[in-house]
Length: 291
Ligand code: ATR
Image (cartoon, rainbow, N blue to C red; front, side, top):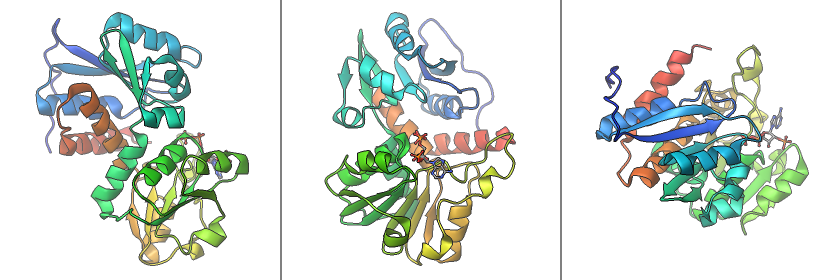
């Protein structure tokens, strides 16, 4: 898809949305959201604000003062955003983490679109039937907890959390009635769905070879399983390559980024998200990074 390269005409009526985080300069969100605004003809613009740890609450106060319509919240501010907004969705309250803020007058509403974004991406990519499925989630950080919660909401029969640090796994598994802590050896071979929600396999600028890692011994994977990775850089992680080699279906991580943004777009604007434009912008933005 060809995207217009000209900046939109900004005016006094232009509405602002933004991401706050640190680091944030390599965020794909400005490309994704500005493409969405262009595609829908909305007079909105989206910027990235580098807000260091400890200043998250100030940034939310600025959102009220400046009349910023919507904020994406990324690390390290998701927890403080949950305690600084006026209204929390049930999901954000359960997770204690907000990645999407909508301003309504002087009141800020906090939600979390990471989990629903993951499930939407999974359904779009692999048409997975989550009802009653046996899922294994590798990792127990913020992304993993959002995914565990969303899989529980989507009707998974069992969500097994496998994590290097067991205490964190206990917290993540406790988010849903069907959650429990398990191990890769015991639980991965019989799973319908395996999700890598750790950072293992991610390309880290300045750390060559980091992306060579995989969170799983490939001998644990089985044909017919769905294997999803939240890592999107590289697009094909070692885990996904191993999974494809045994005949598993694979789902890359960019879809979660695009679909959580699509959910935020809809929360802020009330309009359906233009997914093809958002996908194209995410892919182009990633290709342009060149790291
Ligand atoms: P995010 O918010 O992106 O989920 P996070 O909260 O820092 O990030 O969580 C990162 C997850 O990746 C954690 O589950 C972490 O395991 P620990 O709880 O044991 O720290 C996992 N992780 C990171 N590096 C890892 C590694 N080298 N091996 C195994 N797990 C790793």
